[in-house]
Length: 254
Image 1 (cartoon, rainbow, N blue to C red):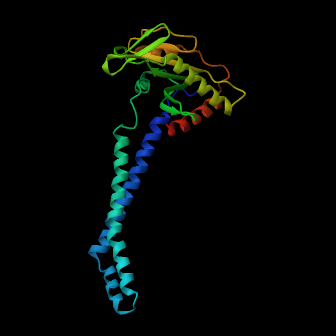
Image 2 (cartoon, one colour):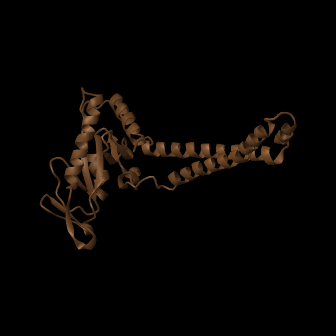
Image 3 (tube, helix red, strand yellow):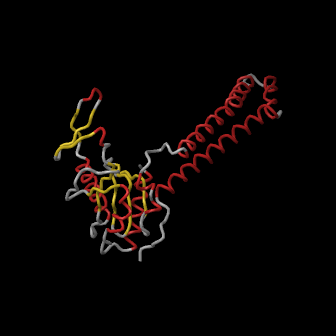
């Protein structure tokens, strides 16, 4: 049976690993810089290079080169350390990407599902708020804000600077095409089994009707909607494990 305990999502694992890697590298470079500075300025180890001038014609050149490297190396190491630590702070501060609302409500979702903030397909499609579970895969695209968009039938428009309205892509059609891209990608690796991919658009107060290829769900109703999805027959634990690994790899590239 599918493990009903929620494992940490790919996004929640990848981000701490990235932070840890940058932090370790930053501390290492800083330590190297401080150690090199101590050797240069606090010990007499390099002082002997000055005496090389009395031993051969090339001694002054060698001594100058050694001192040039010795004086610049600590600064270079410290700068590299600061850059790495700044990268870790950026990730820790959450500036890696937008907050995904369904991923943020992971604790309210049914047991036995996992959430991933974003995955990136090889064709460039970014798929937000992916939920993996016995139902297969569902992802949730936010609808454009109603204050700046309008739609009549299948035509969508957005308000631009100056108050002008211009056509934009139908978000339901866009989500449906993203679902097709994800299905095709998954089919390449497991041709004897087709994974269900549910495309969903969400909003606090959705004002559009669902289509045959894309559901429309109020954000507050997402946990109940996921719980109501039927389990996909043939989606064995082994296939779920394979899907999880594939999605985690795609998440690392997002």
